[in-house]
Length: 197
Image 1 (tube, rainbow, N blue to C red):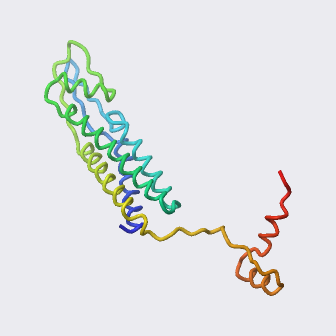
Image 2: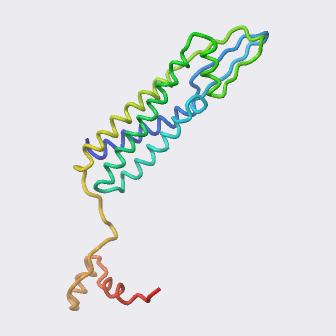
Image 3: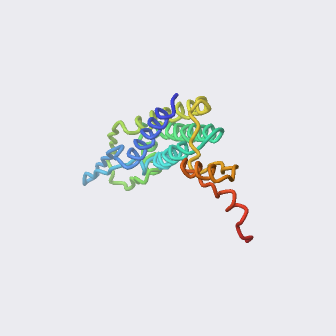
């Protein structure tokens, strides 16, 4: 996989994960003498979604400057973080979609929605697609992490912008040519004439 494609897809996965953590995943309707509608957000139900989004976004930034084995380590980090998110969501989803009221209440209570009281008649939860989107993005993150590990060694080498070899010839013509090329011909002189700390 090419570097630009990998970084673009990883940016997309990270951005959508961050968005999915802040939007409503479910509408909880509690029927008692008074009808209550509560919103359950991705952050409330699975806080790991936003956290992994931040980790993947940081990995995008680090991959732009990393070289060599550092890219492969970052790819492994992306894969491991995404596996953690996928396993977390996979463990929570059966409780979210449970049909029995005690299992549903326990799953929602973990997300900050507590349903208590003897006057509660029924609890209905209407889910939207965001939990499945987050799970799909976690699986995509695993695939991208593995692809980065496998292909990072073939990516073009990063530039070393401010690391230049000093001019070795001290003749006036060589100094002039070094200045014309944009090199600092006095770099080796400055390195040796620094005062001791």
